[in-house]
Length: 297
Image (tube, rainbow, N blue to C red; front, side, top):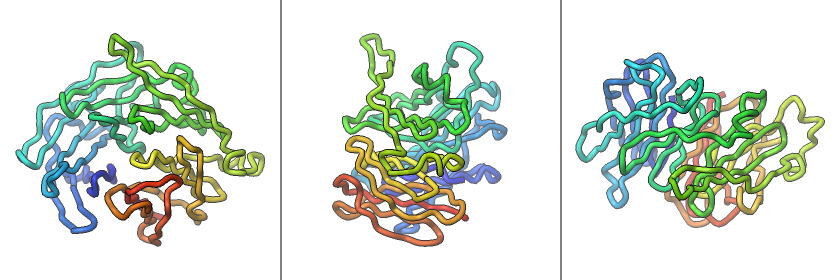
């Protein structure tokens, strides 16, 4: 199971073997890690890999799942290749009410500042892992979106803003809403609706013809503040700040797409749909990252 890419490294979960694989696709360096004790194998799990700034040989891995003792409780642990050991288990306090805490496995982690973020099951909360404190917390979604997130064809994707803050991209049919998090004086997070986007008008899509195949979110490329959208007419890359967009290619059959960002050459984003083809695409705005999308038909 693919868990994500960051800083030129990929993270893959082999749950049947209770192992994680850290892979550098450029050098083919591979590191296998045993999943630390304390995690249940009966619930979804996720994780993230981070390269060590200024040191190409070291990395960190965060593994997130449910406790094998208290199954409704989220737990996480941080691994450092420098020490070769996993840190203590961090736990998250549940939100008020009847709330099921588990990580939504189809949404990969997004790094904003010094924290990693995932969506909790059914999009009712955001999971935050603070890398410096090695602490785990749950952040409520905007109330309006939480009420509609359970509707058919509705999905929330965690993003970052150009200013480096935490954001949300909420998609319902052909309407997208962009939210921005603000930290209050008491440390609590509140949400501000920044804009609403009519995707059928932006992408010149006939909403009546597309009614049976509404847009879906493929993924989010943080370093470029770009979201990838799947429609029946094509895969689109949309810059969330400028709303400039580019059609990357026409979909043919069903695929799973995975974004890969890393250092490459200036003003070029690299995309690959594995194992079918590889291509280059300049981003909607100037960027100096490398992104890869992989899939299986």
